[in-house]
Image (cartoon, rainbow, N blue to C red; front, side, top):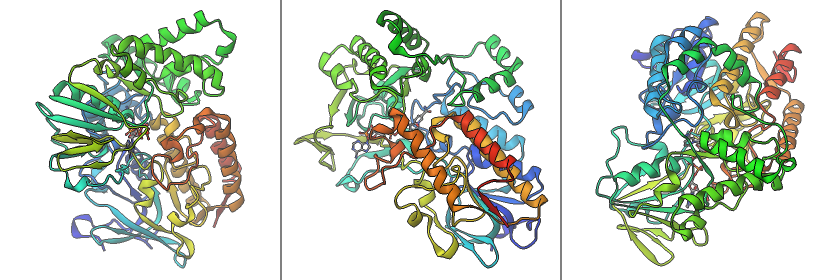
Length: 542
Ligand code: NAP
């Protein structure tokens, strides 16, 4: 039973400790708690960290900031909150986003139902009672009618098994689990492994401090300058004057994010014209670069036009031609998630920065003094692992989730995730996954996607209560059909064609399945609405 500091308020039904247990106090868990309170349901949130904020609590590496404009990467469920909070920059830094998460927690008095520094070790479905039994790493057990996994898509960090890593005598860090007190690299010899978004944001900052920085690159990545800037007071006021208009425009976009999008084909446009368009988007900055033409992620020849322009920019920026060539990606632009940076390519012009290509031979071993690659020994005072995440399923598999008949989620998903709408899975009644695999999630602006899922779950629980139901589980056929649809739309996009974390390629042994739903936010929302209008079609309610 819970300790005295966290005595559960009995569930409204009375048979369990809580109506709902929520795992994670990031943006998803916080809003879920708020909605459940509004329904008069009791909930307990378990959070591993000692504060709210999820991804923005853990990812404190230098240079960490949002790559969706902050005025859109924010909650929209409360109009007063929207008006009272003011973002200072176009892409706010991690610290400001974390401050926002804390502001929301205080404003809605959320902390009293969040148990911090507590991991959920297991959740087991009791078929007899139709309830979940949740066990924490402190050995505490509570029961609930429902569990909601608000565990995040990129929260379980990926630490590859480098030989000798425990023998390294210097300091080592992972970008996804950065020390709260920060790290001072001044005067140090630093190695960074990885060149994904986290590395691309942190490398320019680390290079400014370090005596010498060596970057180990396995796959070159495309990145577009952020052109980040302080937001002018007039701009903020204009956004606040029509926040609902902005949100509505965003909801119509496949990414749930409003930006200038041209649906036309680049293949019908003269080279001079499309290069002018790419230059204009390069100058404005951000991921809107890929919104230049509608077929960039559909046809390889269209994609090449956008990729080649970025490569030209790399060659223009980086003074050493050999380094520039190494930085030029060879794959499809946008296949791996497009990165957004501040001075990334220019950083390689610094005399204290060296780029090492590890695409042909992997790192041999971490040594006590640094690392060995291709028979060369590198000496470091610090190594930064910017090696990403076990995306979308990692955080769920870190919990021993057992459904009907004692089946574990990990076993069920051995060949890849199977879900209905990315929200539920057969065999695990009364369990919801916010932004789970099979939902638009990581291909969209996460905040509106989170809100849409939370609203779906809250409305569903309210409907069930009104109709005297206490058990919900998807039908097998609905899950199978949704899986077929998720795969069909994935096959239409170039995004599913490369070795990215979208397909689990970054984690050895992970099944190669395109995990998010790429049909777009509006189509997905319409499908959810249709399901609800038809009395939760595809679900068994009991
Ligand atoms: P990532 O994109 O998965 O990048 C990991 C990097 O580590 C890749 O360059 C990868 O190389 C390399 N790597 C992995 N295992 C390796 C090994 N064994 N040996 C050598 N290199 C290895 O991870 P991330 O940069 O943390 O970003 C993940 C996602 O988080 C992003 O795509 C984005 O969605 C999100 N994110 C967002 C922001 C933002 O909003 N601004 C910032 C950071 C992250 P390969 O490419 O060859 O696998």
